[in-house]
Image 1 (cartoon, rainbow, N blue to C red):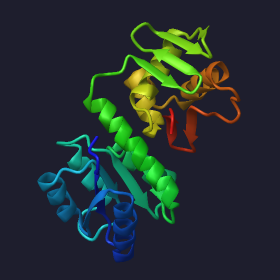
Image 2: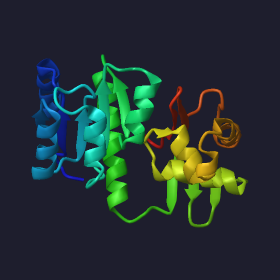
Image 3: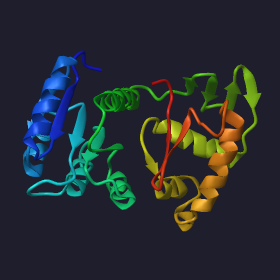
Length: 231
């Protein structure tokens, strides 16, 4: 990871651009800004960022189209920052390639935390694939299909482990119900959300200290789930 990561903010609200430039620069980020979708795409190509912060409502292209076009050639983390808080918009943005979604108004500390997670995930993806993942009291050996909780082995079924491994491979990202079902069960089961709820519940019982207040397997209501390691 660069000592001073580069953040590209694409938003048509001048006050948001000014505020994020000031705040992120104070946190030692290099910041570029664009007020139009096409301008943002051109900047992303000319000066590749480490993270993109993207509004959905832009004067030329909408943010969904910007996501899709970025994903044609880069896997840079994309954090959507939008006043649209409907589940449909969140799911659509994530399915188009966004990694995360925050609604306006937002807390700056939460945004900074999401940026840190995105940068860590990106660095891991660019480096050698991790086969042993540690998070809190958990140690997951992806190669050996072994899970330890506080040093004791936790027995998972094949499907439980496949679901957990996919979530870990995308740690920090919000994964939609459809993407999880398609990747773990297959396209024919993409609409069977009840499968997912059952297996997430089983994983929480086995992995979480308090399954009712999950530390690792977080719910994004109406959208999907994310694995949260060490924040």
